[in-house]
Amino acid sequence: MSRKHKGGFRSPGGTDSMKVTSVTDLPGLQVFPCPVCGLDDVLPMAGELRRCACQRCGTFEITGTTVATLGDWATDKPRLRAGLSAYLRQTGLQGIVPRLTSELDLTRIADSYCHTSFQTKLRRVMERYEELTSEPGDLVLLNDDLDYPLFDAASPGEVGFLTVVLV
Image 1 (cartoon, rainbow, N blue to C red):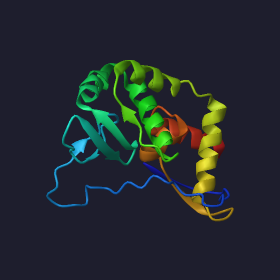
Image 2 (image 1 turned 60 degrees about the horizontal axis):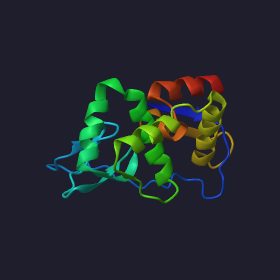
Image 3 (image 1 turned 135 degrees about the vertical axis):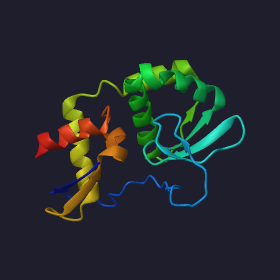
Image 4 (image 1 turned 45 degrees about the horizontal axis):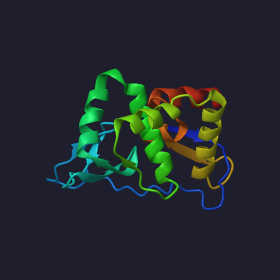
């Protein structure tokens, strides 16, 4: 879901540095769900170490064994999946391509993004508005569905709640 909002400021160079092109616009190309968030927009990669480019998680590398481990998270660990997505997206914005290789690291890393304070989440939402505007009062389109990992939110619905609180 996308939300339009007014307000905010733009920081110099304030754009999202994640450059992921959607593959769903290419007719006849088979795409697969992201092994972390499930978004159907990832190209298959050959070999044990695969590079995924997801619009929600960003670009990351993952082993086949780790893909199998994440399959077990589908129903019983949705919050950890959201935390892992947050880690991937935020790390990618720093110019680093994260590599997912072990369940122990995955659980620890994902969990560290699951306990962000409400105030910090609100600040991150305001900073995102700042990045998306060129001047105060601009109409802003925030994509809750793709951007919730930027705020350590558990879901697009939580981003909707955060934006309502800010308004």
